[in-house]
Image 1: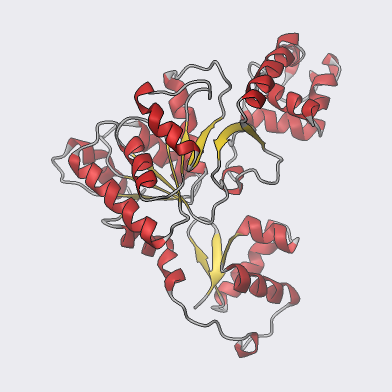
Image 2: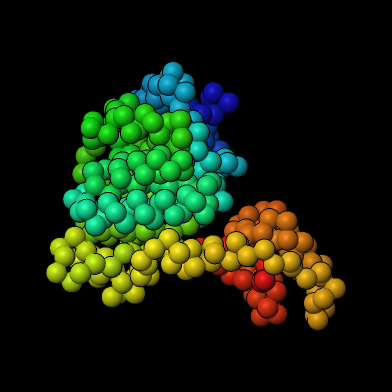
Length: 370
């Protein structure tokens, strides 16, 4: 397993090969070790590789850097998540540019039933602080296991983390650098507190500085890890709007608090709402209703299967039984559990929706109709 991890890390160390091309390379070769043991002339024939990248793959420095990183994560008890791992966050895996490998230190369940990203301006106002605290306080009361994700940056991010800790919710910070440092240094205590109630996550190896492009890159993880993204406050331009656009491109739900038209820190939020890229919310109740989470609080008995006035197939009955036990599941989870490919499962789900037996929730999740 140690050798396997070495080659997995090495796959992320190759200059010129990002997550998307790394995935393709892994798919063609079938195994991470095979990438580094194949002959150069054969690597050159792989679409998108060519002679230059083939030489980079076989450069001895790649495995050397991977060995150093492996020693670092083992020493610091950091958990690596590889794209083919069973416990790799299934929400993130859906994203075409998901990191092929990322590093995590902490104790959070990255596949928690409910995950919410909360982001916004670094120049948070008193209004933003109030809305952040109120939202998280109300969500914590309704869903004690909710995982809050943000970026540990100044402003809304760190207030989201601190309020999650205050109201006993697990919270994960997605970093734009390696786990050998904390940026900004002012947030070190908050980061340490998060290790025992959440954690820190990054797809950057140690010795990586918090350079500007890294913050944009890490935003895809903030958006991809979550069921939905909430923008508390944002100016007309800002990193949180990039996160919102990424979440929107992933077909994830985006919500935003509106502000006065004269408020500079609300201009971005108002624009998202105006462009129909974000739903307008004013409270946790609005958010829960929009996501369908409030329905779970209703304790209505589900009718017995014999009450359905339809002839149901074996697969439909199996799916219904599964949702009766799990209450709510993502389409990918259903496909894996039922051993039915997603392309075959989709028409079954659609048919049950038409019959009024199940509901399609935001983010590709399904539950039985009450």
